[in-house]
Amino acid sequence: MEKINEIWKKMNVSMCILSLLFIFKMTLFGRKIGDRELELLPFYTVSYNDEAIRTMLMNVVLFLPFGLTVPYVLYKIKKKWHRWGICIVVGLGISVGIEIIQYYFGFGRAETDDVICNTFGCILGVGEYSG
Image 1 (cartoon, rainbow, N blue to C red):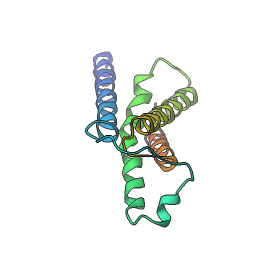
Image 2 (image 1 turned 30 degrees about the horizontal axis):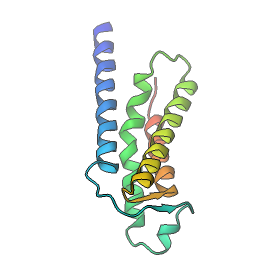
Image 3 (image 1 turned 45 degrees about the vertical axis):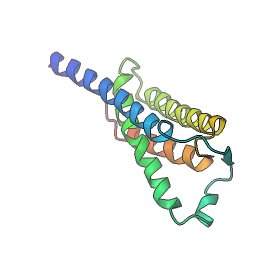
């Protein structure tokens, strides 16, 4: 049983790293430098962009695997609620960091919607944790 737990932990660490790499690839790498755009008003893009809902759903799904794996990576934190809180704050921090980088380098539009949807995806993933 102990060997299975060790394999499970290593698998989750690997999947967490892969999910982070995928997040960075989808949000930062391969984008062309353009104008700096910032949208701080939540869900404003829904009023003028037909693709806004699809984009927001993609942002939720993007952070879901991260939320699924991080609680298993932080297995040494014994209290489940502390582990959940740390996972959610880390997901929020990564999302905010990505939006700051996007704005600073002009890699697309930095939006409050993205942070909200990314964090929600992380929360959904963490919510599936039962350990």
